Every structure is written in structure tokens, then in C-alpha cells.
Image 1 (cartoon, helix red, strand yellow):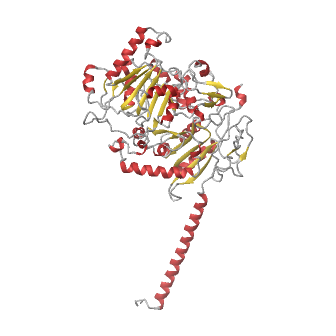
Image 2 (spheres, helix red, strand yellow):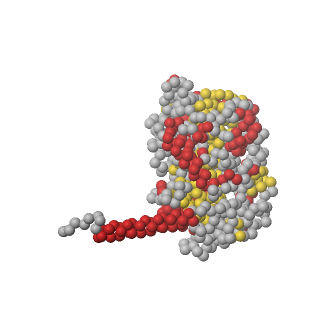
Image 3 (cartoon, rainbow, N blue to C red):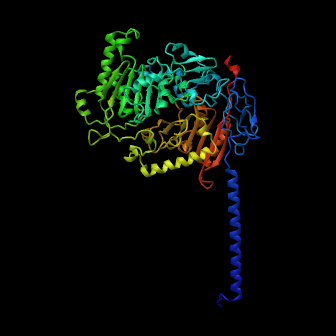
Length: 635
């Protein structure tokens, strides 16, 4: 066979043909890439929080505040319309959507307006009353679940903005006068026309919460940044937590859902952190060594009973060196015994027993002055061994995970602190003062206690959330006070909360119990608050108590564990009318979420990742539309 040389005419023809094919391929590829980028750019233009021609205008109720725009997002195609993140008060809205292929969820009856699924009082009656078990979490079984949208009361109005909301709330949002009557003498709450007013009073602080906190500040320092996280047991309407905020102290306030209607709901309506909870038989849903300060002002918890089990639980969640503050019976019993309608002997015996339990926990009594008594937990347990020789109960807890707190039974035992090498060392590691604490590597990370997380990963996470929040700000009015109560439903290291510290918001950091790693302890070490939660169940709060929900890959975690429709319905329950949800996940997951969101009367749009269209993760921005129960149902 003849050999072809490069210079031959046949070879030249072959080379020309190859060049033409290559040129053709390059031109077509370039055009494809250009058109793809152009299309992606057009679809990723961020929605502006302003009204568009597609937004339906409806008339405001005359009682609505003047000066507010009267617009809500339309029920049109969510992928094409701009979203409106502003609040617009009382609007009537047509429930139907001609373009919706699936049936929207119906509205629940008005008597579900304050429905708290896992703290339902009727269900609670099935359980024992001893140690308040009937007031603990008892979630509905499958046959008790409801699939309807919890309605806002007729004439619901957007809450006051912070800081005005600390002192005022709309009566129509929480139409309960019971506390203003029952607690009239104690000055908890007053009805002032269409508003509630919160004077800051309390059972043990007749001069107001501010003056009461000043009294505490004379005994221990509250302003040097050492105390940042606090817990208020049996909080009432959370006035103690409300007035701590101006001192940069963030309190987790809790109270049961009981005969005093809507205590926790009043707190959250005011923009104050709170959660439904009770000290019963189960541990509180927080990790060990979380709080710098714990407080009880006539909270009616029998601290000295059941071998000191309740004080042992406070000891578990207090940071080494943290304080426990008690006011009310039996403190200062010589002054108050007649008003409390108890004998001197009875009150003295109760105080002696509390003092004895505190000593058995190795606590040191710092001071008792007037109505206040303060104890301090030791920085470590080096000296505790000698104390425990004298006090056999509560004993030192055996092998146990001190952070396990989801449906975990309390024990009357002392939670052992991490070992130290000298008396001055803080067990588990010291934290920085606030606000440096928020951005410093937490001790649990430094010590390698969280699998896969080290100091470099922590720093990467900080930068990641700064970038993400900057991206959110291009769409959401984060800085102007539109949002106050924020929940991060899958908080990881608390990076979202840390990126929001300069704004007038607080964040409930939720760590799902199904997560690969437990990061809630590190979140508390950063000076933030949060709780454990299984999102296959309802959250322990009232309806309409959060302005902004953030869910980072939450649905990927739960899509094979339970029905994500139930999670979205729970989000709808706790989100305020015209509140916002940010959901990050893969396109496949977000497509399912968006279809369900449309059935819940949400307006939503899927946006590209902050890194651009080539990232497989996307961001769904959604607004819960305004609607209320039919006013005729009240009759």
C-alpha cells in the first residue's frame, strides 16, 4: 500500500477537513455557553422588595396603622413575580388561585388559632400530674395530626417594631385579658385601648424589672461581658429577659402552657426570646455548660424536693462559675411570711433544705440581700470530691452524655465537669467576654469535641456566613427592623446568628437531634441561645411567633425520615403573616418544597446560589401571605 506524505494533496485535504470540523465545534460550543450564561443571568436577577404591576392591591382595614403600603404578593407564578417582604397589616385576600393545579390546604377553624401540637392541654390530661408530667411535651400521634393552616385572629396586625414592641402589643393579636386581671396587683400587663402595655412589673419586682436587675447588678457584675447567656425558669411574660437585652444579656425564658393564658406568646409577640417548657421529669433541651446565669423569681419550682433533682438539672446546664439567682419564697421569709400565708417554721425549713442541696452540688453562696439570694457553681470539681464525702446525695452521675437532652430523663446526680490540671482552671475551657465571644473559636471546637470541626473549619464557616448574609441583604430588609424573631432551623455552628449580631434581631438556633454532630454546646459558648429539636415533631412555641425562618439543607436531612409536608405546615404555623422563609437545598428538594409552599398560600421564588448558577444548591425565598380567620367565627 502506498504511503501518504504530509505534502501530498490528499493529506492537505484531510487536514483542511479536520480544521473545519474543529472550527465548527468550537463556534457551536461558544454559542451554547454564551446563551446558557445569558439565560442564567436573566433568571438570577434578585427580586426587589417593591410592588410590581403583577401584585394585587387590596384595601386596608381602617384600624391599620397609617402610612403602610397596601399590597401583598399575588398568587401568580412564583418563579416570575417579584416578592414583597414588607408588612401590610389587615388585608382581605381571595383564597383561590386559578393556576394552582393542586388543592390548597384549608384553613383550620378559629379555635385552632393558638394551637400548640405538643403542648395540647386536652392531650396532657392523659398523663400523670406528678412532677408536672402532664405539662411536658406530648406530641400528637399520626391519627391526631391535622393538615390545615392555622389562622391568625380576625384583625391581626403586624407587631410593633423593636424596641417599641418590648412595651406594647396589639390586643387583637393575643386577645387575652386574663393576665391583666389575675396579675393586676403585680403589674405584669395592662390593657390600654387596642393595645397591651407591659410596665415591666413582676411578682417579686414591684418597682419594675429594670430596677430589679439593677439590684442584681449591685451584687454581681452584669455589664462587663462575662455574663451573656441566661435562663429564666417560669418566666411569666419574660420581663426579666426583656430588660436584660439592653445589657447585652440574652435570656432563654420558658414557662408552661397553663392556666395563665399565653405567657410565652406575649413574650414572643414583644420580640423577647421565649419557649414553652416546664421542669418536669425530662431534662431541659439544652446541652451541659450552656448558661452563664440561671434565675427563678417565684417560679413555684420545688427546688428542695425529689433529692434536689431540679437544682441538679440547673447545675448541668450552668457554665462553670455560673450563677443561680433565687427570689421569692422562701428567701427573706422573715419579711414576707404573712403575705405568703405560711408559717415562719415552714419557710425556714424550706430554705435550709435548699441551702443543703446547693452545698451538696458544691455551690458557693455568694450573697443574700433583701429578696435576692445568689449562689455560684464552682469553676471545676477539684474540691468537689471532699464535699461529696459529706453529701452522699445527689451522687456523681455515672457514665452518661451530659449533653443528651431530647426526651432524656432527669437524674438527681451531679454532672461531672471536664478534668482540669489546677484549681484556677475553668473546666471545659474559658470563653471570651462578649462581644469577642461571638467570633472566637469556642472551647468545644478547640478541644476537638465536635467531629470534623477544627479551628480552621470554624474560620471558614464564619466567612461563609458573612458572604451568605450579604447575599440575603440584596433581597431582604434585614437591617431596617422588619424582622425581630429569627429562627435558624439547622444552625450548625451558629454562623447565621453571628452574622446578624449588628442588626436588631435575636436568633433561636436549633440543632436537629438527627444531625451528624452536636454543635449546640459550641453555639452557647459563642454567646447565642438555642435548643434541640426533632423536626418530625412540632416546635414548642405558639403560632405566629417568628418573623424569619432559615432552613439550611434541613429538608435533605428529613426527606427520608418523615413527610416534609408536615415540616412545612409547622413552619407555616410558627411564621407570622407576611413573614419570610429562606430555604437552602438542592434543586430537586426545593422543587418539591415550592409545590407544597404554593398550597400553603406562600409566594416563593428559587434563586441561584450566591456563588452563581453552576452550584447545584439553590435558595428558595418565600413570603407567607396575609390572611386571617373569618370574623363571623368568633360568634
